Image (cartoon, rainbow, N blue to C red):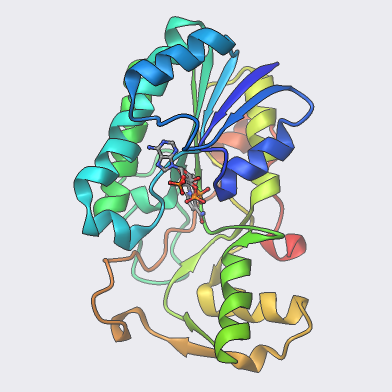
Length: 273
Ligand SMILES: NC(=O)c1ccc[n+]([C@@H]2O[C@H](COP(=O)([O-])OP(=O)(O)OC[C@H]3O[C@@H](n4cnc5c(N)ncnc54)[C@H](OP(=O)(O)O)[C@@H]3O)[C@@H](O)[C@H]2O)c1
């Protein structure tokens, strides 16, 4: 399979490089391909002639998106359509990454998780831009896989790395105890993307780890898995941090579409730590 991965230098892009490593892979970083440049995207797709274009490029920092909405819309909402159209013109499948932040969150843990048919209601610029990107992909090509994921970690990056860095730096980890979600192993996410593509199925899929947790409990589990006393985690509330972009309290998703398609997704997040 000929696979072009855009945004390959990021957390998920790097995991995709591993998952598609046995394929005929061209992994391009931001420096090598700016996904907001239609001419460059067209040229890259025309030159490589991929069968699959994976879009792992994004502005994924929630607060940075609020600070520069135009920049965020350009990368997260407009560029996915550019990639989708270029892929479609060459008969390639578009595989696009999205987020649980397209949902508004319920009032706390315990509500039913969101499936692929749940109504979306993003709370902040990041979520609005990512929802725009989903719509752009759907409009640009029927041959698309949109994978919504949440709280991604890998052995050397993402949430787990940030938790350990905070502990090394401060001797404690301050983490929200009032935000719930499903944490996701990046390598299981990327392997699942490949399985979806190989299956020939199109559509929107929730690709997240199983189980619901808070950032604080995830932090405790990460410290414990790394031989550190979990008592170093200090529970804080989102309201106690001034200037934070609005964040949903619980956007835990369930992988209903994967289940219906009979495709194996990520397992319990705790097992992957
Ligand atoms: N990480 C999570 O917990 C999480 C959760 C839910 C959904 N997601 C989704 O997963 C996807 C990947 O996120 P991630 O966590 O891997 O983010 P990331 O580590 O920040 O990676 C994003 C990559 O996109 C690149 N990029 C930014 N602007 C670009 C442009 N104009 N052209 C080409 N590349 C560009 C960045 O390069 P530079 O840094 O060099 O600019 C970076 O390498 C996103 O769609 C995100 O919404 C992630």
